[in-house]
Length: 629
Image 1 (cartoon, rainbow, N blue to C red):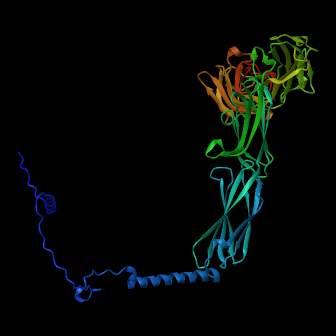
Image 2: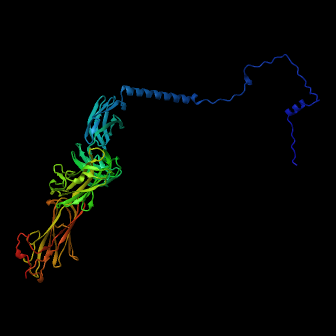
Image 3: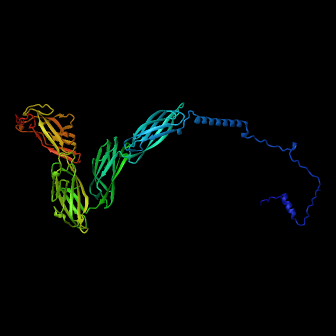
């Protein structure tokens, strides 16, 4: 068991207990006697009666060193104030930017690409002269790339106190109409007895009033869904300066189907690089396409012009214009399609010489009948020849370049039940002597819808098509002994067992368009020897000794007589007895193949063999053609 600690009560407790103990007599305390004596208390400490005190440390501000330092600071401050007063108000070498004024005078509007003269004035209102003053003119030209930021320094020299210095700078900026360009004028100057360069800036804003180019977009206001139509874009350079690195980007709406363009785009089907445009130059682009959309919907084609981005050749760096073309989609009451033979299309390629017959297939698309239907085919383009049009049951208006079919010349167009179809015919021959000939065909219709009054309804461009005329390629060959670039040897007429050499000439030409990748091939008979000589010397002609085939890669042929190409080469002939009194074949029949640069089609042509007849030689003698013993 744990021992309990003894608790000893304190004196206060014991006294309390004694107070409340019953029956206990209280302890008697003897009282002290009271006296009349009065004790005096001193009013202040004196002598040895003073209590000891702790010595207080003296504050820094009360120190002598601090007072001396403080006085020095006050003296320095007063000296600075006096110096500043005499410098700014009594003259000196210090200068203030607030006393320098930069003023720029000039038109705040400028046509894009035009030069804008600006007069700069700098006034020095300081009491100090400005010894060296330059104005740095900096602005964005608006062409993008490394050459976009223009910096020009103008030296103003010394500007004395109270004087004004001035000069004129000319700037040229590009951009979209209404855009604003900031021109920053930075004054850099020095003052006497100082190497420091002081700077003051002034910003001047110039608004582009007109774009350096005008873009005109022309096309139909309404078209039929999924019908081909043309959009013509004309870019006109209206600045007095060359507009560099021009570019055009066309944004197509949803449902648009690109068919073709002339010229072809440089990137994709929507981007053309026009290059540098001199003042007054015009560029035209025609785009063929169709839009599939519901009746009543609107679609917008937007043409954006600007300078090419030097960091990305497929994008515009600085935009000049954005021109929209709004087109409404409608549903025709009559549909039409054009075909030739069994081919229905919006694109046709025809011969430049022969006549081509076309068929228009039409149909009533309504649930009600039509009366007094009139269908018109309109023709245009440099390949259309109004003197070479033939029409069946229709009227050709050569003044307007159109064919009209109606109930007056075609009874099938009077009363047309719902869903009824019909056909119309015409033929044409393209115009001769033009480069890259094209014929555009647009079909319109109008008619009275039965039950909806007597006024005819009209719909334009229910069909749009393009007829491209393929170039007529020709190749001729000839045999010479006395003509051409080579000296031939042997006897005429050719003798059995003796070699006679001949010069062969091939000439290729195109009538209306350029030809690319032109290749001519022909074979040498077994008794003919390739001599390895050709003219011109850089002509790309080769001979395969295994299959005895000659191949001439002529490259590009441009249209017209000036664009034709000609080649000469030498062969040898040793007649045999079996060939006596015959005209042996010197070059077998051959063929030409090329790509028509205008239509994109592959064209081909064959040509006949050459025998030993020298009918085209200038010294032709019929007795020299046949082989003799």
